[in-house]
Image (cartoon, rainbow, N blue to C red; front, side, top):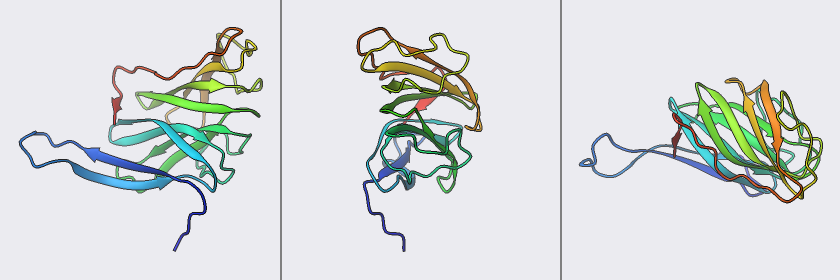
Length: 178
């Protein structure tokens, strides 16, 4: 028996019946995601039955698999992907620099993941960027794109001015919100 010693995230996926005349909702699966400290989810989307989750973690033991960033850098964002049956964590990665990083919204297009949130890290992972450095505010927005495997960063940029900036929404034309 596995005993969880800290807060965990419960992921519940509900499928809506094809006809509203059917009786109620159908639970596809329910699972936990988290480590031994504080973990919080802010965004969840589904594409082709696979479920993508974004949030923040203070858990050094947060599960990572097929990850871009396997090491906890300090109050990191996370991005995780579950199989369509919920029985397998396809990838899960820490995402951030040495300071506070928060994953707030996620979108999926053709399997590639777009992530946004805010960071206080001046060493946040940046690649092919529009804005390559922090603007010096308390928080800067980031927008990042990962490959469909989650192990490759395709681009990542800061967005922000000298004041605090935060992002909470990332629209997508094909991803379905849960």
